[in-house]
Image (cartoon, rainbow, N blue to C red):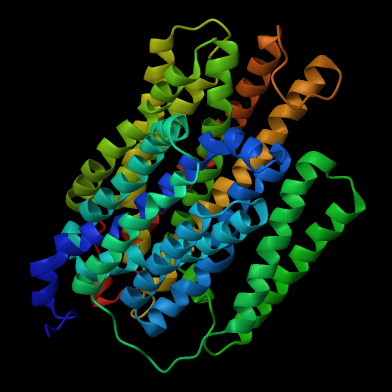
Length: 487
């Protein structure tokens, strides 16, 4: 039995280990985008409505966000490789259950199981990469890992369309099963298990945080349709605030907290995490707003819309490993600043689009945003993981994953609400969709939402400039596995 924690084992098997680790991000992102295409078909087959079927998407995301920090901490205690394999098994089992579902309630339960499994794996894959790869190759490895996310996002809609056209929607989930089985067997053969420790898990803190997250998203998502002025929505927001305050109190008093709050004393870590939150919040509007602009305003059919939207993840997938490689040579902080600046410019360009624009111009602007996102992501992740103290790689990676998912879900909810609010103010009555014959109303809302996103990204650019100066002064404590790669 080889010693899977030795430097020799890492050096010999690091690229094979990376290949195993990209399975789960690919499946998780594919599962998110592939489902959206099938929702209209599922409404008819399950005899439900669009509002209810949205739970199929929402429950998965809530399960990920609510549990991912717990699994990051468990990875540090029980072994990151073990938690990754556990997550793969649970995700695959949830996918099988979802694929065999014939009613909405069973499907929703299956999606929650999928989300829990995805969270367990995603919470630990970055920590394993950081542990296995030396500082000089870590950015490139994290960039290659980023390709799996871009591919999952890119391939979801066309694969979903093909499956729904020729097979039952159930196969959207069933295709995860063979991939999950192969991924688990390879993980069993190759992944380092990690050392078990005698530390305890702060389940009280984990439960409090999970309850706060569920209550927050209940208020956020229910408020979209019911209105945020309803008393029960207000009470839900107050409740989640109280629960989060209790969580922070519990973590401060706990000898072995679920989240090491001392991580946030490192300004480089904190600024990097804030940049992740801003990026995913600001970018989330594109995935929701842009398809409506292309189909309803530019009058382009859904098939071509999917191809146009693919330009964003394609460029991002190409740039992610390249930027990771470059950051290994010149320093992560410098590269992230370039990525954020380009992203900001790209979103600004999208905010200038009118109701009569050539498709080539739109594709170019989407490519600019994708270029910036690809340049930013891998180096920023590398920078976050390089600040992790010894024994904290799992929770550091899970905080990063939590922030990504939290930013995306919150951004989708709030920016969509803002879009409809702006459109309603423009026409003088409440609307919750595209108004036939009034593309100017939608364009007004879209331009304003993107403009706000530009302002938010500018804040991130300024923070990154501060981080660049801090980076020259501060050398964070890091484990040998997470040794410094910044310049």
